[in-house]
Image 1 (cartoon, rainbow, N blue to C red):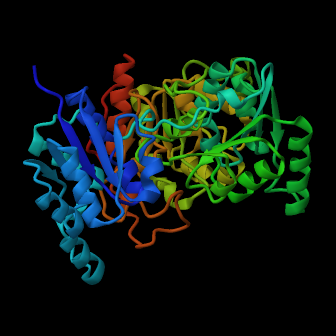
Image 2 (cartoon, rainbow, N blue to C red):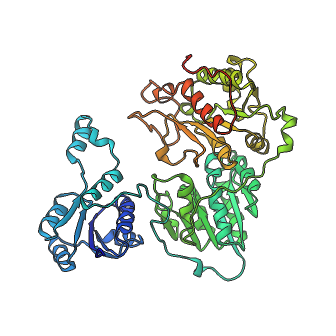
Image 3 (cartoon, one colour):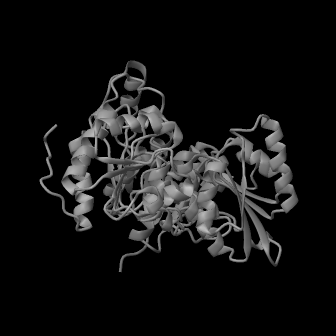
Length: 509
């Protein structure tokens, strides 16, 4: 039987890089369940590193000589250098440890690119990928390649809550998609704290999302975008929160305004992300990672209250009876959402027209067009270019009707947008077109039944949400996703549902 080794991992800074070591530690623990894993970090990062359940001990680096003495005293069998600077290399050399691994930092390639814009294939690899490659030298199979929500154990605050019924506020005043992606967190809150009354603070246009989930006892609307007075609306909401005497507030929205409102309301337990502009106002800060989906990212906010973060989508409650009033019946099973708040997130109008025309012809149906009032003109041009192929309900539906329409579909084709997440919540397969944004930002459609269409370009992502125009002027991130590619994705999804089309004209433009 193989003896479990004593392993020293060196990653002295920074906080983000230490957080990224989690998959390495998880793979080490899988390979040697009984291993003693020590991490060498700077003192200011010791508390954060200690929250990883796979680390046995923390060794705080104060100076080179002291660290070297501690390393020799530890009699380690394996040294893994994930810092890869001169100091960590010298510690490795003088440690006396025979079995070693080190990640490739490629510092020269970085300097050449930053200073002289000289590209290198070495720069295409993410730091996490480099970390994992180092495990090959010590024969550790890489099973876990991404951070998981259970990688970091936070202080559990359940004991701090008073006995009996509790009151919890959830503050999410971001966009429609952000609201939908908060639903699994809301469902998890009700599972972890079943006797808790949950109040959601959100925008008027997203209030129905939370109401339809059946998970919120109350929904308060934040009219920050329409109110004549910023401070007037802020203090109105602050009064509402104070009156309800909440025990806990969870803040997925990473804004200073939301964090400040939670603090001034006097809510004793305030949970939010460490990357929030108002993180200093929280009592419990959860590490924020771009490397996991936004659903899983939001679910980490439950960690101070529970270790259960398994993701699932609650069933939204649509109004199927409203469909006939809108002119929709079972012959319409493909939907399209061509618009977006951000112009660069919109797939070209002529591409939409060509795709819709072919889908309508091949599947002997009309394609349902949906969108908000600000997208009426955009979708009208698409309808004009695809005559007889669409049922255009853009700007004619409220949130209830939009949800009912999407729920009735077998396929939803969309840009990166809020309605995309509504489709996912209803289990409707999605073909999502991603241009300026990327999967790595964590907002891609969640689940195995969905397809993301995107092109690998060095300029992606150009922004977190999108922008008014392409920064480089070519808009290749969208133009390279041709109608044929999206049609092929649509066919793949519909074939899986046993819905066959006739004479799909791939390669015809």
